[in-house]
Amino acid sequence: MRSTTLLALLAVVLLYLVSGALVFQALEQPHEQQAQRELGEVREKFLRAHPCVSDQDLGLFIKEVADALGGGANPETNSTSNSNHSAWDLGSAFFFSGTIITTIGYGNAALRTDAGRLFCIFYALVGIPLFGILLAGVGDRLGSSLRRGIGHIEAIFLKWHVPPELVRILSAVLFLLIGCLLFVLTPTFVFCYVEGWSKLEAIYFVVVTLTTVGFGDYVAGASPNQNSAAYQPLVWFWILLGLAYFASVLTTIGNWLRVVSRRTRAEMGGLTAQAASWTGTVTARVTQRVGPTAPPPQEKERPPLPPPPCPAQPASRPLSPAAPEKTEPPSPPTPPTPPTASALDYPSENLAFIDESSDTQSERGCALPRAPRGSRRPLNTPRKPARPRGPGRPREKGVPA
Image (cartoon, rainbow, N blue to C red; front, top):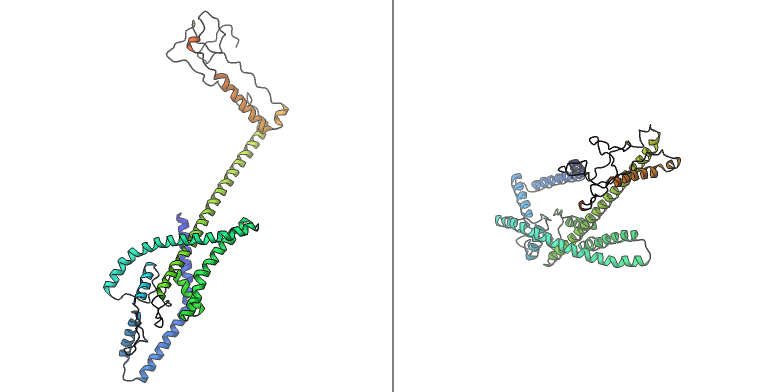
């Protein structure tokens, strides 16, 4: 990711955080101030009703009660009640261990001993990667099962001659709807019935849990009235399946974004290549159309080039007038003919053909193969005069210039 993109993304996240902070402050701060005022009124009322209790003693008592509630104590339980509810029974401890490895961490129950905190450190370091591997496997299997079921529905739609693009959209919508029905709506109604929460409170707990936020103000099974030991372990298995589903959804969205990005790059590359080809073609056509109006050079398009180097003699073999090497005389170059009217009818094709054919003929005229050494003519055999190859060789007698 480029630095500019990273800075822009950071600015967007910071702006999002500031906007969220302003909204939460506007919504929650008045309620906090009202609760603080009510607590002060209750405290003054208690002191007036019990003049033997000092303000300092009441403050220490409130602090101890708050610490006890934070440690998991139940204010409704006293020494005379026979309640056996504990925040650390086997079911609650299993649920607490599950909140560690899922990184939810509700915070309604916290560790108070040094030994428990030390064990929690190593337990989280081992359990979180282990749960991540399990979550990936369960999400893959769950997503495959849901896609297999949706595949049968896609086959039905295709039999009804529904367009494939619409079928893909419908399958994605069905994948989201089925997951939300199984892991969001159904648990919402279950928690409303079992915990006695409102629908807003239940769906709030579901979303906060499956997004691993875990505030801890609402926790399933934390009520003292819940005496079933298997209730919180069942809630943890629901958390496992819900997190796996959301992981599968995020993986599907990531794959779709990668496919869209790859297709976009391919389409942009194709458009760039087409634009470059079109630009080159237009430039060549304009150049060829404008070319004949320019003052013509000595010859057609280019001055006569010296013929390409033919197989030259080795430097160690001196030339002697008695025994020159055998070479085939090239055909004398024909003077260029002026372009006719028919050559301008299609300038792009004819000029290209003329250039290409002249270059090809010149290459063929000088690339004649040399005769093997064993098949040379005798010394007394007359041979045709050869055209001088350069300014250093004298012109032979009897050869016209």
